[in-house]
Image 1 (cartoon, rainbow, N blue to C red):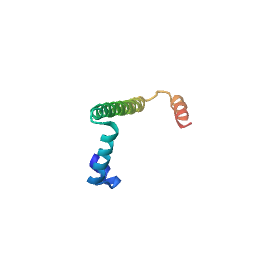
Image 2 (image 1 turned 120 degrees about the vertical axis):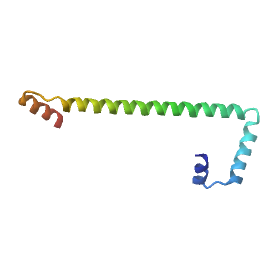
Image 3 (image 1 turned 135 degrees about the vertical axis):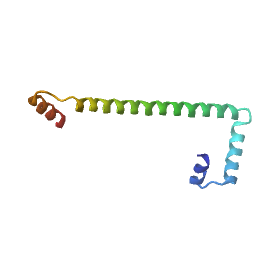
Image 4 (image 1 turned 30 degrees about the vertical axis):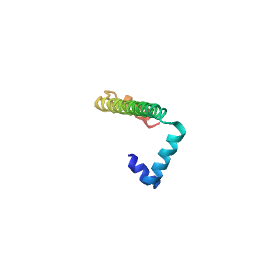
Length: 91
């Protein structure tokens, strides 16, 4: 993924090395592992949150499909009730 990002930005090895050197100068050697650890935790939390959202969406989609399957399986005995339900669905 990182490689595709560099290709998208049209960055080569020299540009990447200059950026890494500038980061090293700005933050220092002692602060870099701490920054990387924080960045890793942030990325992990984002992935967990996005996975939770995906699961919630799929759960709701499956619940709606199940409700539609139950509704289509049950047939009302009264034709007047069927027309009333259809008019509510169409509106």
